Image 1 (cartoon, rainbow, N blue to C red):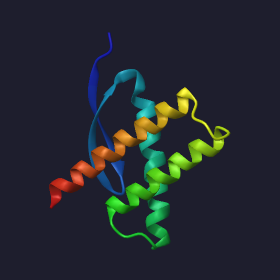
Image 2 (image 1 turned 90 degrees about the vertical axis):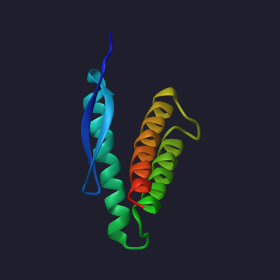
Image 3 (image 1 turned 90 degrees about the horizontal axis):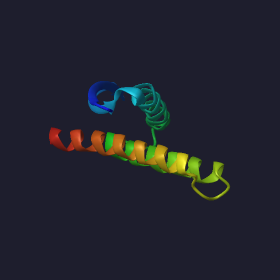
Length: 100
């Protein structure tokens, strides 16, 4: 039986609570760390302003990486990882909307 629990991840210096199955916790934390790294790279280049735009650019970059690594097509693992990243991005954007 898999039970979800709430864990805290950090993206661009902000904390987010995300529900996650215990056995997927380390993978979620790794995905959040990777997303945070990519978003910080985009932010630090200074060409994109705003967390929402940075998140969209990071999502596009991650999807491009997945597509080009897989020889032009998605494997099930890549689909799962992109879906996971999309869920993280949606959570970040939803929290951003609540601020305004």
